[in-house]
Amino acid sequence: MTGLKEPLRGQSGDRYPLFLPLGERAVTVSFGDTIDEETNEAVIRVADSLRDHPFDGFEEAVPTYRSLLILYDPLVTSGDRVEQVVAERFAAAEQAARPARRWHIPVYYGGEAALDLESLSAEKGMTQQELIALHSSAEYRVFMIGFAPGFVYLGGLPGQLHVPRLPKPRQLVPAGAIGIGGQQASVNSVAGPSGWRFIGSTPVRLFDPKRAKPFLFAAGDLVRFEPVAEAEASELAVRVARGEAVVQPELVA
Image (cartoon, rainbow, N blue to C red; front, side, top):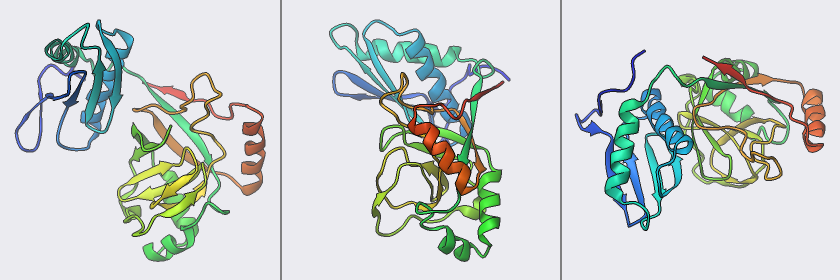
């Protein structure tokens, strides 16, 4: 695969990256007008480059599906200089250089968190086991983290499982709940309100402020869900409560 030497082009023909100043200390860089892996990969590569080799005045880079928010100190650098640096980093990005991490996440498709498993199976005209098999057969990509600390937005949900969110969100869904919303999948990082459909839960904690790295996942990671029985999920939950790391990622070239 070749490096990203030419600007990306959106469906409208616009050339990317596009720079949108946000006040005197931030700029949003848009890398495209569609949600796809290539655009998201460009976002992540530039964000990683800025974090690993920050320019003078750099403060933070926040990646999303197709754009990157960059915060900087206006007493040290300028918006024009930030745009110049980002354009250089984008042109120098090498697509084949960044390995991905793949996580295998245990999921119990049942219990209190499986709030929509029965109704969603009926809605889709399949048995619960067929829905579980389809959901766990896919490989998902972490496109971005947001909404709540460590909450992941996952692409790769099989088309048969695409479903609108609830018209009225539930007020409390537990941490670890496995969700479906529109064309996306998710894992609740903390307990809170949600309009997503939920079909199970994992004992793995996506967010733990006591860990050296509080967020388990990062944008660009790959995720596979592995069905486990209720007893195994309960045993893993005990180990997680003791502070054990029950999952480790594998590197994928």
